Amino acid sequence: MNPVRWQRLEGAACAVLALIGAAALGAWWWPLALFLAFDLSALGYLRDPREGAFVYNLVHSYWGPAALAGWAIAIGAWGAPGSQTPVLVVAAAWLFHVGVDRALGYGLKHDDDFQHTHLGWIGRASARDK
Image (cartoon, rainbow, N blue to C red; front, side, top):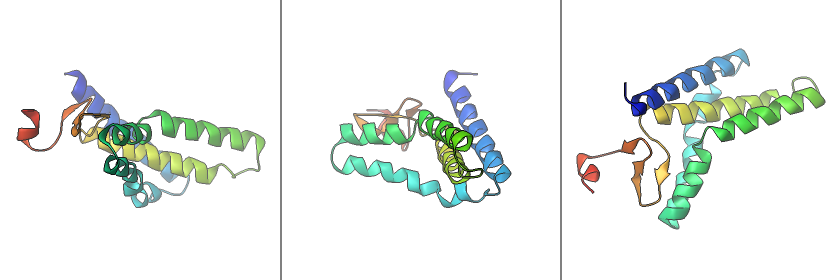
């Protein structure tokens, strides 16, 4: 199996685990409700392709939900019991979004074209001919 397929499979696994985590928190529907919110990061492309790719990649990397989950764990360790739950739900929704995007082949963007990702070209076949 080629590396891109492994990365897409990894994305699907992350999405499933995020849904399981959200369900364990009693909020299985939040990842679905917040799904498109993370795509607001693509608005950076209105200013400039390079800035758009930077902002999009910042939001569509695994490190963001991981850092947020780590922060939630710290809140739980030092805060009131249950105070970390909303933060963990957002982290699960974020991970779900990134995982689904990767599973569908939407990877991190190169700054030359929105359709050019680390997983290859997305969209019409003509985009691949660039």
